[in-house]
Amino acid sequence: MTTMQLKEKETIRELLKDYVSRYPSQNKATASLNGVSAGTVSQILNSKFENISDEMFRNLRAQISAGKPTDGWNIVETPLFKDVYFALSNAQEESDVTWLIAPAGSGKTVAAQSYIREHRNVYYLLCDEDMKKGDFVRELAQAVGTVIDCQTAVAAYSGIVYDTGFFAHSKTGPRTFKAALALTNAGVNPNEVYRRLHENSSLGALQLQKRAFCSMDLHCRGKVASQVLRRKDFAETGTTLEDTEGFVNVPLKSREIVISVFVKESPEGITRCSLRSKGTVDVAKIAWSFGGGGHINASGFKSELSANKTLALVLKKISEIPDSA
Image (cartoon, rainbow, N blue to C red; front, side):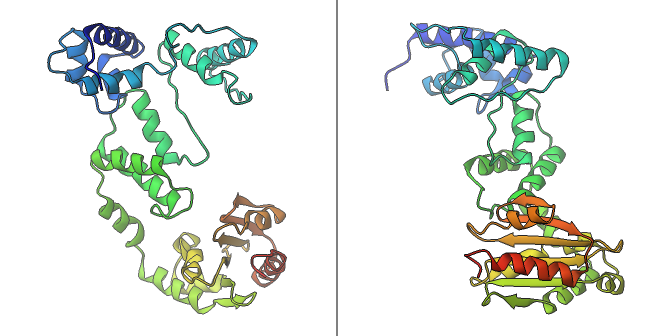
């Protein structure tokens, strides 16, 4: 890789100066950057390049020049470009929310990044269907230049491990691990979080889990497991519905079982049904048919029928799924 010339460094300094101007303070701008210290930003802004490596300059340029036209290219204000500007302006000035849908490559991102360069206090987050709530909170905090304290980091980390089943769910990806790393660097103790979430049950909850496990039946040639808890189980163990967290996942520890059904009667007389599955077995469709919701491997619904009738109807629906029959 060639040595970076002084002219290139001066260009990056101007980009950095423009980037910093979009934030309320230089410290907030620095906090929004990955792997760049406040001292490095100050030195570059003051043209003190001697102790700054070429790698750092390249890292900085990659973060602050996103969306800028390459030399020789100009941005054309197409109708879509103007629509994006209007929507973003309306969002910033009127706190409005707008969904913009257009084909890939039509210029949505370029228009958004152009708007960011021209306006203060505007931030861009790239979200996708795999993004967890904790990921979003952390990335938003970084984008606006907020330094996350340990207490906030613990809350965000707890949200991530809850959403991903401690990084075991199928949609756990590099972005999630990157967020987890940043939060542990902010002071999170993963073992302490695990202990608080998974080693903090009451004796009553253990007794309740025993009853749930003892109620387990197998269906569809051993591919489907069901558990049932009734109101008297909660009353006799002094527990609540919250104490059943994770019970539905236990049968899936068996390699033969692909669907787990957990039916429980609430004190109010409402029957609740939780569904979990492995791989491509879609239990969300079952939940939807009963007015519930969720996603392919985790869903649920409420029913006014008894636990027995609810379970019977669910098992009938499951028997119609090819992968479970």
